[in-house]
Image (cartoon, rainbow, N blue to C red):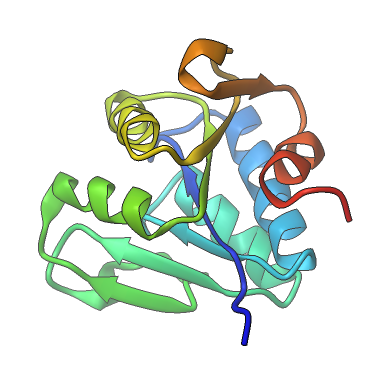
Length: 152
């Protein structure tokens, strides 16, 4: 039996409007392709990606930093309170089949670095193209989703 791909969508909790737009569209496109959005479960890029997935009838898993699942954004389908703080970033990356980063913050950079170390497929919207590390910068969510899931 095959399972739905788990695609981590990572980015800042205090993202700008363009990153939020990209994240919501990315979540929607992933859900339409049958993938599950995996994220940190809080605000910003995480919430926008979950909102996009939910709007398309998809699912999302939020690995929360604290001990209370009620802290999850309202669009998370499965909130998991890890109690790990920022160390949950490693869990997000390890659980994911691939990673789509949107924008950047210190936490986003840590997730990208962890994904490089673990050999995950990484696509970065509004980020740097670092081909020697396996990081592809793209401009549009459709391209990001195609990079991680293949063509429809």
